[in-house]
Each structure stands twice: as C-alpha cells, then as structure tokens.
Length: 325
Image (cartoon, rainbow, N blue to C red; front, side, top):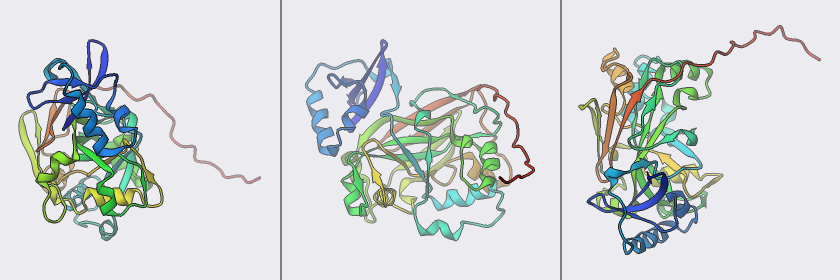
C-alpha cells in the first residue's frame, strides 16, 4: 500500500494512493505522521489504509502538491555503499587513493541530519548560502513504525513500517571544509532533504527481497534528463534491519524515525564521479538544474535547483591569548 501527504486547496491531508494516482484521503487525518505516531506498527497502518479505500476518492496526485510523506522526529543517514565511500573520500576528504577506511567495515556508521529541512517530491531546492558546489545523493529511507530498544536484526524487521526515496542534498565545498574539524557534516547537509513521493509499506517490497535479506531495487539518477547514475539497492553492505538494530543500540528508535541507506554507488552522487574521474564532470548543480531520482517499487522524485540567499556574515573565531582564573 502507498501513502501520501499532500496539500490541495490550502488543506493538508494524508491519503492512500491507488495505482492510477487517485488519492483516498484518510478521514480526519492531516498528516501521515499522525497515523504512524500511534506506534501500532505496519498492521495498524494497513488496516487504516484498507478502511480508507471505502470512502469517496479525492483528487488525483497530479492535481496536488506532494509534501514529504511524514515529518520525522529524527533522520539518521547511514553510509552503507562501499563504492560511494571510496569515490567520495577522494573528492570530498582529499584522501587520494586511500580507498575505504578499515573502520568503515566495523559497523553501519550514520550521522544525524536536519529533520526541519525535509521537503517534498517536487519542491524547489535553494542553493545553500555560501555554497558553489551543490550535489544530490540518491538513497532509500526506511521509516520506523514501532518503538524499540536494543533490537536484534530479526526483531527490527517488525519495527520498519515502510520505505521512501531520499535525496540528501549536499553542499560539497562547505562539507569538505567543515569536516576538517572532525565532527562530521553540518551546514554542508543542512538546507534540504527530499522525501517522497510516497511511503510504500514494507509488505509491498517483500517480493524484491533476495536470499541475503537485501531489497533488490533498481536505482536511477538523472540530471536534466540525462542519466548519470544507476545501481541496485542490494549492493548495500548492511540490511535495513541491521541498520535499525544498530540505531537502537543503547537507545530507542521511535515511530516516524527515518533511516537513510546512504548514497548508492555508480553515480549515486556527483562527488563520487568526481573522485573517480579526477575532475568535476558532470559539473556541480546550478540554478535551473533538475535532479530526478527513481527507485523501483517506490517511485520518482524530481526537484529543481533555485538560487539561494547570500550568507549573513559572521566573524571568524577569536584567536585568544589564554587567561586562567
């Protein structure tokens, strides 16, 4: 089953999406977040969706503005594609031909990104203030539907309610500079993150699961209609269940939490191609460019880059003559 959150005639609604794009609004519900936050998991969401199909249909998806399927309380973005790590390390970290750090193989590393920066499937993306090297990142995100702590991977499967397409927009010039401080990305990843077009419930994607537990979904990235990257989601080095289990280690995951797969390989972002080719080809994104990402079984998001604001000036750090009390 597919769910959408949309805006139509100044009203926000959550709906079940039929194959032909017809929307069936969930009665009394303005956001899919409301349905997920009850914490009753996939079965409860499917029951709510099935009952919604009995009510009169609403508008067609082409007549509405698609919003992010949900407003997540947290967004953990993992890095699970080995090929991506190797290529981006060359171009962003300046690590030459150093390959993949040995520590990467220890566990599915992630960072927390900005839940307030989530945008819809067709929203414009402003260039981050002060950036001249904007990039996209093709990912899939799992959504948590039940609270859990210290989960095993087998237990975690029952906590994943569905999946959506995730574009982790990245200001590579800002990211490269700030990560020299050894705290991870901040403003390089802070302006926009696309989620959409729908939340596809986990049961819908079970036919794509291979014998090792990975979802074998085709991934395609295009810029201005030209394909620049293609990969399979099953090239991840950890499953979503393993990622969810690691996320819950020593803490809790809660309904609505988003877990990004990390960027796929073979052109899942421009920076990987820059690292492989030794030059910025294709060039960084600029206003007017449209990035279209398609994930088999989930759908397509397509966002156009627009001009952003100039940064408000701040002083550099004060180099102190250190005094002690």
